[in-house]
Amino acid sequence: MSVKSRPAFSQEIIDYCNEIQLPLFSTSWDTPFIDIMRIFSEILLKNEHRETSLAAALKNAIYYPENEDSYLNPLESNGFFRDMNYTVLMISCHTYDSDSGNSYLEQLEKKIRYFMSKGIVYEEGKHLIVLFAGESVNDISQKLYDVCQNNSDVYVGIGTTVSQLTDIHRSYETFLPAVPDESALCLSYNHWHS
Image (cartoon, rainbow, N blue to C red; front, side):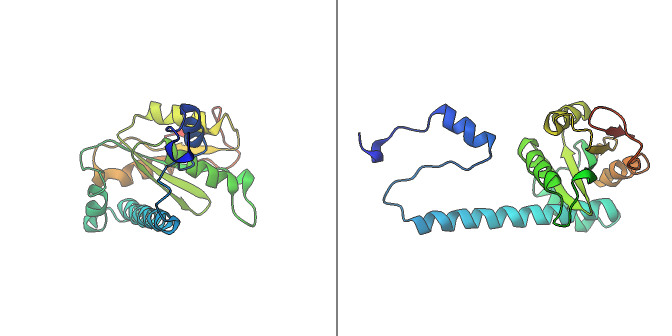
């Protein structure tokens, strides 16, 4: 059997690539490599632009909720509808801060992006701000627990769930008074909840 007629990837390879979040694809030998790279570059640029636009829209929804024009259209055009449940979280893990950033927080951001079915993640200061759409607090808590792997250095503040896109700022505001200083921690991965 020639390499060209090799069967599809085994489930083991697919599972492994999913686990490490590695793209997996096949193409014919006739496809020029430059075309493949061009397509990947376009996809990456579009995704980066989308994530940047969504993060800006979320910031506007949190900090300037009265200016609905600055966030409703970008969020709604990406599937964040007015009548959905929304929960905002703040995550930090200062133990891993260094002069070159926080590699643990960066890895956590990637893991959250991977498991989150609908949401937005961005870094603000030394924290991750996360918006979950359409998920219960129990589901969010369980997913975070699984991702944080019982790490007592991770601090998570979960705001109350709101049922309107225009009320996202209320979810954000409800966990802010509950955010502890670094010595006031609770639960297994230091989850504090308003």
